[in-house]
Image (cartoon, rainbow, N blue to C red; front, side, top):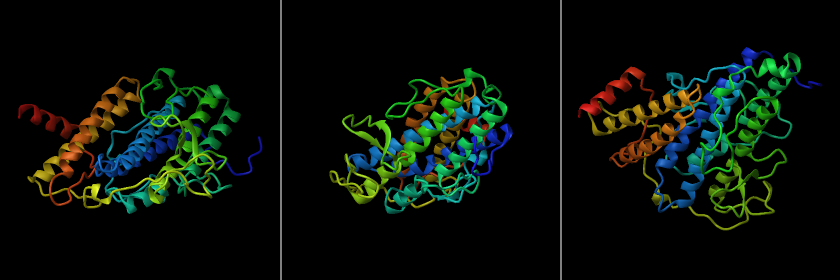
Length: 348
């Protein structure tokens, strides 16, 4: 095999480390997407809600595929830890892109477009300090191929198959969650992650899936879905990244967005806002724990995680309805503090 570029991920240990980074990277996109989603009035902004919630579900799918990849090569996915939730604004793990918690609007769209930006043609794989997410995954692909070639597939894919999460655990997405057991399925998982984000390798706006909510058309990749909202038109058959979207008009009603203060800070202890923030943070930290369990041998926990998402949404909406531009901080709550607050709620 001809390596035109030096292999940056050349050991199994390094591969496992980078796949844990992939989990942290996929997770880092979730709080910004959720914040924008929670700020939207679904009746006044149905299209924006559909786009942001659809992208969020697919980011959850990517998180699960990254966990499957790490499990397949004998690693242990970790999510329930303080490092997952540093204060915002923050940089993506091992990258240069900064993400913030902002209500839906121009600033949020520009951030999402930067996040999902396709790698330029011929861009090199980057295993650290990556400019685009696609280049980071290209470095993982390069490392996987190299290790399979030098060590053999059986040596690389040494994980317990029972830890794989697959099947119909994810709804509302044209993408699929499947087990990773060899190089072919691993490359399929990487392709699913990258193409749903930035479009397919041929430079098209489509991600290769059928649009679940609109079966008559192909699914537009994340980057181009946000372009549709920014430019106010849908992509239709025949459109390319160069032509831009030429289909039906789509609108965003700025009055149908809650006026949240960007990157909220914890409110005064004892205040109603602080109580609502703490409740949300406890639930979100519990969600991380459920996901960690799901990816470490207890796949049924994904159902519990999905249920927790509904609780989270209700708590966020109650919080953001409070006066003064209140919003969630996405602060990590340690396990022992979570148990205390659950006990307190039960006693109330």
